[in-house]
Length: 125
Image (tube, rainbow, N blue to C red; front, side):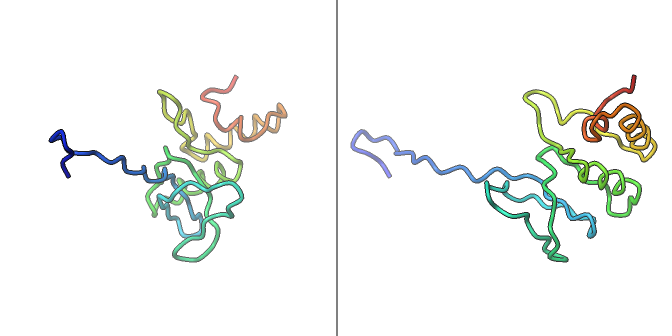
């Protein structure tokens, strides 16, 4: 639509809500859905109707057949580790193998450090 000056009018369209990954561990499935608002309950899995865990925008799921990868992911998510984007970097270090998870869990038990913090340590002292 042109105005009296001959220029087209531009209308600002509202931005769609930001999406983040939600994971269903029993189904080994990940879905991009809008972030949860304050007071909202957990999203439900479309397959099994069980609660899903918000994993974060930088989450990359393992392949469905990668049993060890899903076990590592289960430990991380249940410990409270999420995959959020930083300002200029990614989500940071996350263990990828069960041996890395075991090393960090042993370190956390020995030192008393919270599991979530020990799991995201790139190197152990």
